[in-house]
Length: 272
Image (cartoon, rainbow, N blue to C red):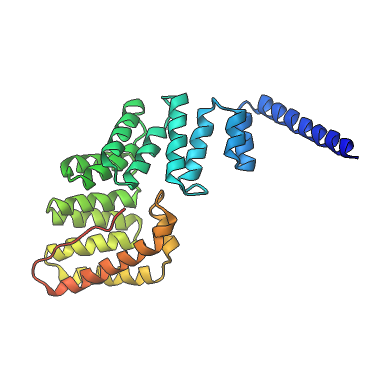
């Protein structure tokens, strides 16, 4: 009886292998490993079958970088494996740079983003990421340049306008900061990040009434949001920090409202 079961199992495994081979041969679009990964999410099996598939390693890295699970170390491992197999694969240096940025390893993040731009200058999203790195390392002129370059490519990005407003604020260009926030609000009129940025800019140009309106609207929108809604604007961050980050943002807007009664205004940007 046991031998019959063994033969039956082997027969089914044989049929599965043949089916996979036929599928790959017919489609010509994916490896057996990628097929297995897609339907099983067993990385060890998929990479065992297709050890030289850079796209597979990249896909697994993306999975561990918030695409289904969250494990920064595993994501970095698979992004690096993809690059070891194919040094020219698009997006791997970029994603690796994002993992370093989240860990505040700005030197490593800068190195990886630069490599992505050297290899794929048309991958314009890299300018946004490098703009963030420059912003957090206080290289504001370079951050401003990169965010502008990114917005030329993707003018519908509210985040690009918000982060450029942040840079202008850091440079003391409050009028320009307000203009960028307003540009973003044309795209996303109920965006609390942009409303907070606009409010802070208006505070610093003495337009307190308008600033108060922006802050009150931002708080009302935040009250209708969940930590998960907040986290959707921060892809790549650990879902476990969503609650804390959401609370800090609300506290930031509330603090900015209190600043309406002060003379010297100093605003801070919520971390991205």
